[in-house]
Image (spheres, rainbow, N blue to C red):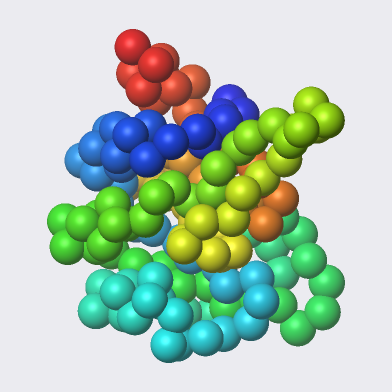
Length: 143
């Protein structure tokens, strides 16, 4: 997996276009606790495969009771909803030249896109501003 900076809505749309036909399931982890009224989760519920509490997910390990993870079937309708966000977050540099993260309307949830074998194609640790993509998809995105 390669680290990727998320920089624009255009990049977000190009990435979702690349992911849409390769993704079998999507995992969403609500790091701040379960909130079924959140727009992302409301949009995901019709495609729900599984919901569980987890302490470990892509890029993260956490103590305590765990966080709710929603596994949903990849569906064109859900991808349409994901396209409505500016981006999962925006990587930026502040006025002092320090790498920074801007939260978007997507919020703080972590998201992962998995292929038919369960391997991650792309995932975020949104609250930390980290995103990772497979090398092949990164080349396609940058190409």
